Amino acid sequence: MIDSPDVIVFDVNGTLSDMGPLAGAFIESGAPGHLATQWFATVLRDGFAVTAAGGSAPFAQIAQDNLSRLLTEHGVPSVADGTGRIMEALRNLGVHPDVPSGVEALAGAAQLVTLSNGSAQVAQTLLETGGLLRHFTRLLSVEDAPGWKPARSAYAYAAVECGVAPSRMLLVAVHPWDIHGAHAAGLRTAWLNRSGAAYPGYFTSPDIEIPDLPALARQLATPRP
Amino acid sequence: MIDSPDVIVFDVNGTLSDMGPLAGAFIESGAPGHLATQWFATVLRDGFAVTAAGGSAPFAQIAQDNLSRLLTEHGVPSVADGTGRIMEALRNLGVHPDVPSGVEALAGAAQLVTLSNGSAQVAQTLLETGGLLRHFTRLLSVEDAPGWKPARSAYAYAAVECGVAPSRMLLVAVHPWDIHGAHAAGLRTAWLNRSGAAYPGYFTSPDIEIPDLPALARQLATPRP
Image 1: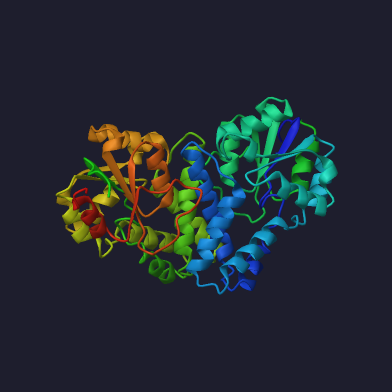
Image 2: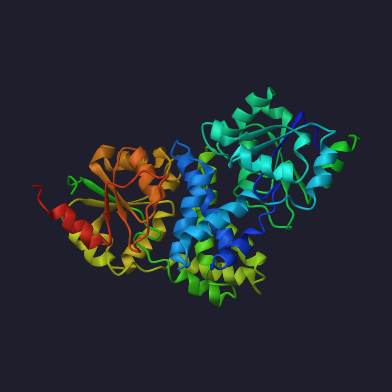
């Protein structure tokens, strides 16, 4: 149990969106499906590098540039076609099955916003397609912040935009690095662990761990003893 | 051509060491060999995340923890054995074929040091085994700096340790994120591009690009017109 927050801040890529279909887009492009996971890790690695060095860069630029080099390295017949196809798939992912009922239950508990290292447009398309956009008051992107999550400045930007103290916000994410950064910035944290994975020992532990979004709604709804 | 530096700073993992054999260690552990590349990207992603959030963590801890989760996820029969085998392989890599002659040629041109996100011990074992340790005056690790490369503080630490201005140092690395960070910290940069890859558009370009270390030695030895 944790105190009910004023604002629930959702990460987008992988937390709300199901990135599973990206493997199919790699295969259709003539590349192994397992590259989807490597690609996403590489995009975050490079975005975090730019942030650690004191700057920022658009997610889509890092994603597309990395993709083009990755497909070239793997001898894909048409790198331009493959890059276009996979970037299109990234912009048109669907939500995880637990997201609609979870978001609807949580909408009564707090103000809901997103905070993504990607663009606000990708979040908007995702939530519009999923019929969930009406439940969110703000779709925030680090493109308007000094750096990417997990830099403190990204979460501080979200707190200012929402007009609340960081301690009144709850960050929900599947990514342990996001939990770590949000905690350092003073937010409370909920780790969405759909796969039953172990939490990395080098990141700050989450305040709560939940297997899906409805479970988070139940925890927030339960009165304290 | 660039002005001869006082100090040449070498990255270690992948720049001096050949990480190719790691794929074999994954296969011997019962996991696909392509996971080696994904694993290394993930380790850097998480190390950069800790740095971007304002902290630091030991490379070996992040590497081992990630490896254990990755092998579990891929259903490897004995995760403990596989983790031990792959970490052992990481500690005992050899140098790339161009490194011995390149380092010997460069030793006459400047003071040679290493600066790694890994431990100084790994660099020492690598260079001792390769018979090159005598050419290096310092083996530096970000474990003694406030954060990992590419944070400015990591390069600043190396400059202080070597007693020279950052502008008198040349960073040599295969990783574009390292080139980007070193440039931001005021060092000059040489991108070692053994594979003929394209340079990412979102990182600051290197001052020079070379296909191997002997080519760097020739560039530094060539008198300016």
